[in-house]
Image 1 (cartoon, rainbow, N blue to C red):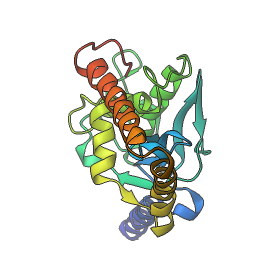
Image 2: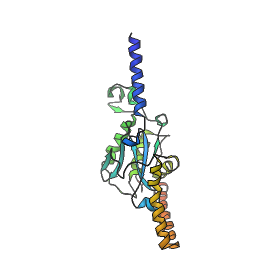
Image 3: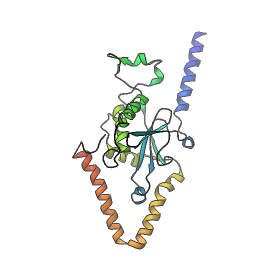
Image 4: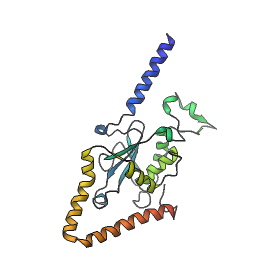
Length: 230
């Protein structure tokens, strides 16, 4: 009798876990995902540039949205258009909270957690970034997400704003066909208008802008390590 009750209880937990991991764009729920949305103006000229956030186990989005402010469950620039669901198995510093009944089981060495849950890692990064000023060039939404991934030691860590941007650009899945339009249609329209009136001059200035922007983050990430915060 006891074994039957225990097996039923385990089955209920598994069902809840599966349900909690389901992605639901209509409710903006993306469990254990990195999410992305285009930025006004900037993304119109360079659609690879966007705003990024990371999601808790229940799918709620967290994003570094301004000075000393991490937005919870209200993605700053609208609903996500792209996402990547990350595997917990690739997080080296990770202990699934569903396997433990109380915080006492996670406390070691004088009350300090040696291994944290997914949400614990995000909570610690949130606490840290609530005391940081926002700067789109030196401490931005990518910095916050990279910090979270490093706390989780996702794929052994060592994440920064550059390899994070490459990850979402290469492996990010679009939420829907409408999300694809929302990402690229402004770029196509603005580029068409600018080409019609500016021609080669527009292309020259656009190339210079992209070169400076990409160069800044490459230099700040790999040459001057303390320039861009993570």
